Length: 157
Image (cartoon, rainbow, N blue to C red; front, side, top):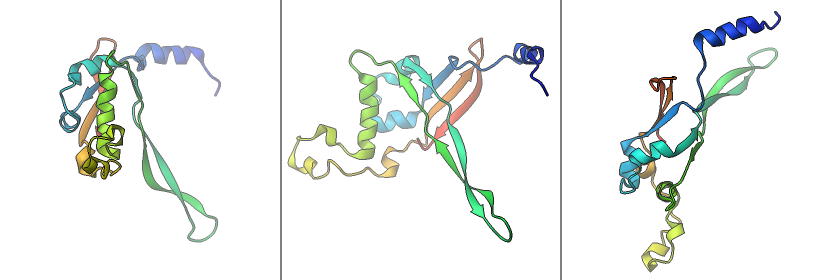
């Protein structure tokens, strides 16, 4: 079947399309409670996110052979990380917010030299439950009028 430009134009004109600029990211309470809400970011960060990708996933296949030629079967779902770009304030409070979250994950070695007890634990990896957020972020797709048309909750972010 040949490409029909009139059918394409009618499809896009009738249904429209999701614009990558019409989105919103909401920060969940889990993140704020674990990292600290003293940054005043809950509302301002929403306005400073310049781009975000919706999470994708891929199926890893397994080669299976019972008899005859081998074939591929679905094996495991892999979730692809998302990218969020943020316009930072002059004092870089947005960067500090995410750096503190990373400190919970990978240790507090960027703040080394505080005391001798700290030096022995500065590269210790954090416990999973101390940094994971059951409902960390929600990404929304918005229509032309700003109404939410699609939502994705990032679980265990």
